[in-house]
Length: 137
Image (cartoon, rainbow, N blue to C red; front, top):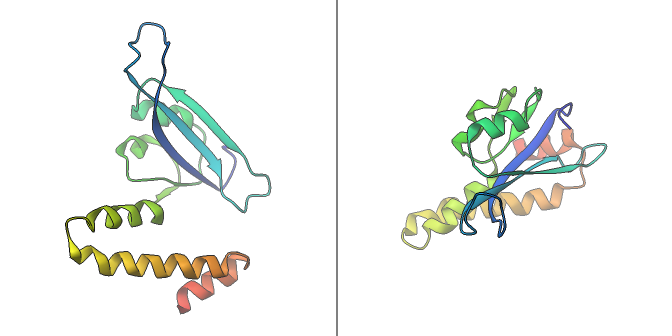
């Protein structure tokens, strides 16, 4: 997987009920690394870590020199990839959450919703054609 040009990464909390030398209420983390949807061979890799430390991300992606798409978690700062790019789903979620207390979040949220609708219409197009549509629309 590390030879791919593009990877996606994320992590989430998990609770391990019986783990040596740790109480059952401890937070642990499941990290996921996956190829992009259009990769020639799709793959998903799950890794367990008792912490969310950046050293784990660095070890997990060691040798990866492509572009990593992930959220804004600072733990990815130590990953020596060519570049890191954000995720629109994470951005949309921030505006969705902000709608509960700030009506000004509605306009950017609506723009992102429209963008997602267009992306669904173009999902079967080749990458070059999707790029043209994005630039046009």
